[in-house]
Length: 183
Image 1 (cartoon, rainbow, N blue to C red):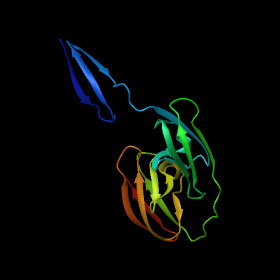
Image 2 (cartoon, helix red, strand yellow):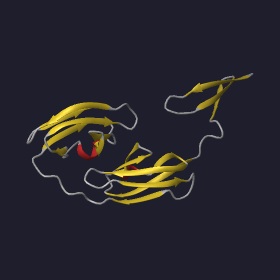
Image 3 (cartoon, one colour):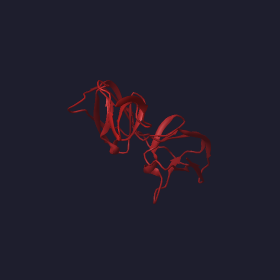
Protein backbone atom coordinates (compact mmCIF):
# COMPACT_ATOMS: atom_id res chain seq x y z
CA UNK A 1 0.00 0.00 0.00
CA UNK A 2 1.27 3.49 -0.87
CA UNK A 3 1.01 6.58 1.24
CA UNK A 4 1.82 10.19 0.39
CA UNK A 5 3.67 12.53 2.70
CA UNK A 6 4.81 16.09 2.20
CA UNK A 7 8.44 16.77 3.01
CA UNK A 8 10.64 19.84 2.79
CA UNK A 9 14.09 19.39 1.32
CA UNK A 10 16.65 21.79 2.81
CA UNK A 11 18.10 24.09 0.18
CA UNK A 12 15.07 23.91 -2.11
CA UNK A 13 12.17 26.31 -2.06
CA UNK A 14 9.48 23.82 -3.03
CA UNK A 15 7.48 21.05 -1.47
CA UNK A 16 7.99 17.54 -2.81
CA UNK A 17 5.61 14.63 -2.68
CA UNK A 18 7.14 11.42 -1.41
CA UNK A 19 5.43 8.15 -2.25
CA UNK A 20 6.50 5.21 -0.13
CA UNK A 21 5.58 1.81 -1.50
CA UNK A 22 7.22 -1.14 0.21
CA UNK A 23 10.94 -0.48 0.13
CA UNK A 24 10.92 1.90 -2.87
CA UNK A 25 10.72 5.67 -2.77
CA UNK A 26 9.62 8.02 -5.53
CA UNK A 27 10.02 11.80 -5.31
CA UNK A 28 8.13 14.08 -7.66
CA UNK A 29 8.46 17.85 -7.97
CA UNK A 30 5.19 19.77 -8.05
CA UNK A 31 3.81 20.91 -11.39
CA UNK A 32 3.07 24.50 -12.29
CA UNK A 33 5.89 26.31 -10.43
CA UNK A 34 7.12 29.68 -11.72
CA UNK A 35 8.79 29.65 -15.11
CA UNK A 36 12.56 30.12 -14.85
CA UNK A 37 15.10 31.45 -17.31
CA UNK A 38 18.82 31.99 -17.38
CA UNK A 39 20.64 35.30 -17.75
CA UNK A 40 23.98 36.01 -19.42
CA UNK A 41 25.67 39.32 -18.59
CA UNK A 42 28.48 40.32 -20.95
CA UNK A 43 30.14 43.03 -18.88
CA UNK A 44 33.29 45.05 -19.25
CA UNK A 45 34.91 44.67 -16.78
CA UNK A 46 34.05 40.96 -16.28
CA UNK A 47 34.59 41.28 -12.52
CA UNK A 48 31.63 43.67 -12.13
CA UNK A 49 28.89 42.53 -9.77
CA UNK A 50 25.50 41.52 -11.20
CA UNK A 51 22.29 42.34 -9.32
CA UNK A 52 18.75 41.40 -10.36
CA UNK A 53 16.04 43.38 -8.58
CA UNK A 54 18.66 44.36 -5.98
CA UNK A 55 19.77 40.78 -5.25
CA UNK A 56 23.47 40.01 -5.80
CA UNK A 57 24.01 37.02 -8.14
CA UNK A 58 27.81 37.12 -8.43
CA UNK A 59 30.44 38.61 -10.75
CA UNK A 60 29.55 38.75 -14.44
CA UNK A 61 32.29 36.21 -15.16
CA UNK A 62 30.37 33.61 -13.09
CA UNK A 63 27.35 33.55 -15.43
CA UNK A 64 25.18 32.34 -16.97
CA UNK A 65 22.92 32.90 -13.98
CA UNK A 66 20.30 30.16 -13.93
CA UNK A 67 17.00 30.10 -12.08
CA UNK A 68 16.01 33.72 -12.71
CA UNK A 69 12.21 33.94 -12.54
CA UNK A 70 10.73 34.70 -15.96
CA UNK A 71 9.24 38.19 -16.21
CA UNK A 72 10.23 41.85 -15.86
CA UNK A 73 13.39 42.63 -13.88
CA UNK A 74 15.92 45.38 -13.29
CA UNK A 75 19.49 44.23 -14.00
CA UNK A 76 22.24 46.32 -12.41
CA UNK A 77 25.97 45.89 -13.06
CA UNK A 78 28.38 47.56 -10.62
CA UNK A 79 32.09 48.10 -10.11
CA UNK A 80 33.31 50.94 -7.88
CA UNK A 81 35.76 52.14 -10.54
CA UNK A 82 32.96 52.62 -13.08
CA UNK A 83 29.53 54.20 -13.47
CA UNK A 84 26.65 51.88 -12.53
CA UNK A 85 24.85 50.24 -15.48
CA UNK A 86 21.10 49.56 -15.15
CA UNK A 87 18.75 47.95 -17.67
CA UNK A 88 15.14 46.82 -17.43
CA UNK A 89 14.48 43.54 -19.23
CA UNK A 90 11.96 40.79 -19.62
CA UNK A 91 13.55 37.41 -18.84
CA UNK A 92 12.05 34.63 -20.94
CA UNK A 93 11.86 31.03 -19.75
CA UNK A 94 13.70 30.02 -22.92
CA UNK A 95 15.69 31.80 -25.56
CA UNK A 96 18.17 34.67 -25.43
CA UNK A 97 18.35 36.57 -22.12
CA UNK A 98 21.55 38.54 -22.59
CA UNK A 99 22.59 41.91 -21.24
CA UNK A 100 25.66 43.68 -22.63
CA UNK A 101 27.12 46.27 -20.26
CA UNK A 102 30.22 48.28 -21.09
CA UNK A 103 30.82 50.35 -17.97
CA UNK A 104 32.26 53.86 -18.24
CA UNK A 105 35.37 54.49 -16.12
CA UNK A 106 35.28 57.02 -13.27
CA UNK A 107 38.26 59.23 -12.34
CA UNK A 108 40.84 57.36 -10.23
CA UNK A 109 40.88 58.26 -6.52
CA UNK A 110 43.85 60.23 -5.20
CA UNK A 111 46.29 58.92 -2.55
CA UNK A 112 46.96 58.39 0.31
CA UNK A 113 45.75 54.78 0.56
CA UNK A 114 45.49 52.04 3.11
CA UNK A 115 44.66 48.41 2.33
CA UNK A 116 41.67 46.31 3.32
CA UNK A 117 42.26 42.54 3.33
CA UNK A 118 39.11 40.39 3.19
CA UNK A 119 38.80 36.63 3.56
CA UNK A 120 35.79 34.36 3.18
CA UNK A 121 35.43 30.72 2.07
CA UNK A 122 32.92 31.80 -0.62
CA UNK A 123 35.15 33.34 -3.29
CA UNK A 124 32.09 34.88 -5.01
CA UNK A 125 30.84 36.64 -1.84
CA UNK A 126 30.11 40.33 -2.36
CA UNK A 127 32.15 42.88 -0.44
CA UNK A 128 30.23 46.08 0.30
CA UNK A 129 31.77 49.23 1.72
CA UNK A 130 29.31 51.64 3.34
CA UNK A 131 26.46 49.66 1.72
CA UNK A 132 27.89 50.00 -1.80
CA UNK A 133 29.26 47.09 -3.84
CA UNK A 134 33.09 47.16 -3.94
CA UNK A 135 34.30 43.77 -5.22
CA UNK A 136 33.87 40.04 -4.80
CA UNK A 137 36.19 38.13 -2.46
CA UNK A 138 38.02 36.13 -5.16
CA UNK A 139 38.91 39.34 -6.97
CA UNK A 140 40.88 40.83 -4.06
CA UNK A 141 41.76 37.94 -1.73
CA UNK A 142 44.15 35.05 -2.08
CA UNK A 143 47.57 34.31 -3.50
CA UNK A 144 49.23 37.42 -5.03
CA UNK A 145 46.16 39.60 -4.47
CA UNK A 146 46.77 42.89 -2.69
CA UNK A 147 43.34 43.57 -1.19
CA UNK A 148 41.35 46.76 -1.70
CA UNK A 149 43.14 50.12 -1.74
CA UNK A 150 41.08 52.70 0.16
CA UNK A 151 41.45 56.27 1.27
CA UNK A 152 41.95 56.52 5.05
CA UNK A 153 38.73 56.54 7.05
CA UNK A 154 36.01 54.58 8.80
CA UNK A 155 34.13 51.97 6.73
CA UNK A 156 31.19 49.65 7.30
CA UNK A 157 32.35 46.42 5.65
CA UNK A 158 29.80 43.76 4.75
CA UNK A 159 30.77 40.35 3.38
CA UNK A 160 27.74 38.76 1.71
CA UNK A 161 28.19 35.11 0.65
CA UNK A 162 25.88 33.76 -2.05
CA UNK A 163 24.39 31.12 0.27
CA UNK A 164 24.93 32.30 3.85
CA UNK A 165 24.18 35.24 6.13
CA UNK A 166 26.09 38.51 5.71
CA UNK A 167 28.84 39.52 8.15
CA UNK A 168 29.12 43.27 8.85
CA UNK A 169 31.82 45.08 10.86
CA UNK A 170 33.21 48.59 11.31
CA UNK A 171 36.82 49.02 10.15
CA UNK A 172 39.25 51.92 10.29
CA UNK A 173 41.70 52.13 7.40
CA UNK A 174 44.88 54.18 7.99
CA UNK A 175 47.25 55.51 5.32
CA UNK A 176 50.04 53.05 4.56
CA UNK A 177 48.51 50.40 6.87
CA UNK A 178 46.52 47.23 6.33
CA UNK A 179 43.23 46.31 8.01
CA UNK A 180 41.67 42.84 7.81
CA UNK A 181 38.15 41.41 7.92
CA UNK A 182 37.50 37.65 8.11
CA UNK A 183 34.18 35.95 7.56
